[in-house]
Length: 120
Image (tube, rainbow, N blue to C red):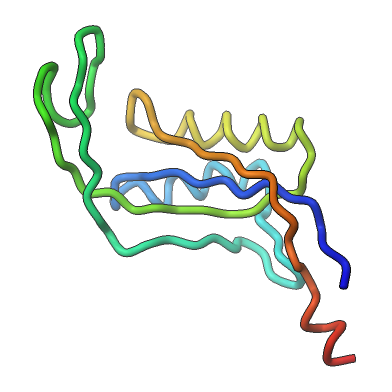
């Protein structure tokens, strides 16, 4: 079995901004996985909670207030190329409506195209 080095990018987005964020990312990378493009995963809407501190300019809530807001987890894989990762994260951040979005990046090994090999 051959595994492909990749980055798994995870972020949390208001439900109404999911498509816009993914559109911005797909301009930089087609989000290919095997013979498929535009591959991403998203959760059902959940709740994100935060306490806005002095100096912040929140999109939702107010300084000094504990705030709950709707949020969707989206994630996708990109090839492990540092320049590509920087471009993808930059596009994501520019499209994201929040002042300080959570963006997590994990180095992973993807099993792209493995099932094809098993069926050959």
